[in-house]
Length: 505
Length: 119
Image 1 (spheres, each protein chain N blue to C red):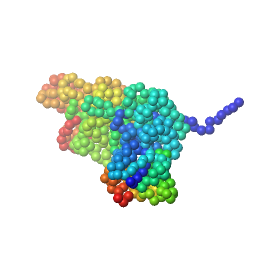
Image 2 (cartoon, each protein chain N blue to C red; image 1 turned 90 degrees about the vertical axis):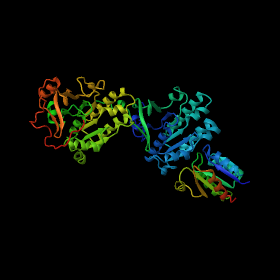
Image 3 (cartoon, each protein chain N blue to C red; image 1 turned 135 degrees about the vertical axis):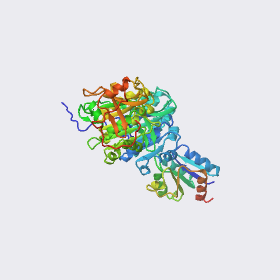
Image 4 (tube, rainbow over the protein chains, first blue to last red; image 1 turned 180 degrees about the horizontal axis):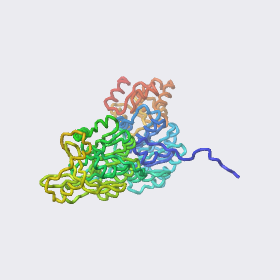
């Protein structure tokens, strides 16, 4: 009987791409000795991507061979690459070698090209081979069969040399490409129109040997090369809520009481209200409780950090001190044209990097403005929320309602209740030619909560919540004889804080 | 008529150089790698070689070393061409006469070749 003992690990080794986000999409990178097609229209970013991978590979001690079959000459290409931060001339020619095989293909056909690739792979001990211009091989082939034979032979050489091979092509044939069935992976790069804007998107259509993140992942071409933003809906699939019952103060004593002790760690709270109703104020109070044990993050689209700090200071909340102590970070992303996926990934990366326990997102509208389609935002938010729960982050997100005053509350998000544990509603109500604010809790995880409506006030004294529902009842029913007043005793939350003026919500 | 041998693997580069130099009245011969370049060298005995640094099969450094080792070609002036800067090229070879960085301009080429061939 013959027995064999495994003496080595036969699992395929990975070659990280070094492209931010792409290794997450590929769950670790390409496989050694495998052949991949990278397909995209001219200008899609194929050549930059391949060079970026080569330079990262060289930086990690690998060797790359870049073979072009197209018209763009190396001098021009390198001139363009010099603008990119990943470019380092020190790697050329010892670790990255550029050759043109156009003439060889013209003069000696596919056999001549194969000989060149095989010899150069060996001569330069390449562990990555890039063939830029697969379309030229296709055009030179007299039949699909001959083209497939070339790919097959190249695969055999790449596997024998443990050389990961990237074939770049425009893919003129539409969807049918016989070579796609043969290679180990297919990645497409596209520039997709959404109304008047366009978004670059990367998709892994095939990836042998491993799963990958499904769907179209947006990417940007920056001065640092490509940056891929994995789709949160495919990246954040776990829902490992910690199950803790630890409560975090909202920063407002009466609201904590209504919530039976505060917000539970790892839950998602939406604060719904019209413009100026006090959503950002609530968020500032929540962040004002940041501490070493509960690091906080403000992720906002509207107010600059300076404005935010100044507005909070007026209410007596010293965010600057929290920032200086390293307990609070403010990330401001003005609502210009952005990629929704980049926002979701950034929030999670920030939460992980800084072990955030309190997060205020201001607000939902920033996601809506960045989304290629508004329908996508709820599922996007659900994915991000899942990951935040798993990280144990108590998250508060502001959602603006369209109607300023009135009995009807329009929540501009379908199905928000299903993806959040807590919902707080801020409303304006009119009474005797004045506007008053009313707060109520629609939903809260962790059992009982006070469902009554409470009048609240944002004033020089900060936020003051009525200790009972009576004033709110009078306001909403319109039956009050006198102007409703908030009970001044017991003192409101943060009564010691001195403030100067009102502020918007 | 003076002869210039251009050795470059990239499509377009040799063609452009050839047309520029032929317009100036030179005879131009081309090769697409160092191995082919050495063969042409024996055939045409050029007055000047314009040599690409990175090429398949045999690169510019190796071809230049072979040239300098052969007394028949040791004194032929060589213009080393590369997309890299000269410092990167000098790490591999210093046996060339002049370095010319790609991409280049026609006037620059004409001036350089005329100077090297003392026209």
